[in-house]
Length: 139
Image (tube, rainbow, N blue to C red):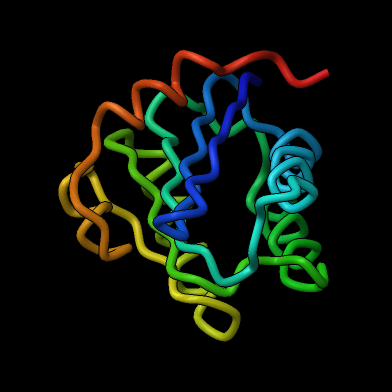
């Protein structure tokens, strides 16, 4: 799995980008990297670029990863959007959307315009591309 993110403190915005095979441990490791960044704030809004990723975990593994995330003291509280146009990542996103309602607002979109609108930010595709280009393999 490859991952990158960037935090834009002035907009209270985080953009993440995933590619390759997503496993429970690697996906949670990515969350930990974001949460441990000095500019991270739990209330920031975020966009997760999932379109180039493939879920390599069972539904029970995904649910376990969610539970671990929901229990973590640094989990986000702001609005988050998953942007993907692939069937499996959209399906996992819809499941996550329903499960996350008690913790934070989360929704799945097939286009960036809708995702940016959801997190109440102007469309900034150049930032998405910049984050995508920084993706590197999680070790």
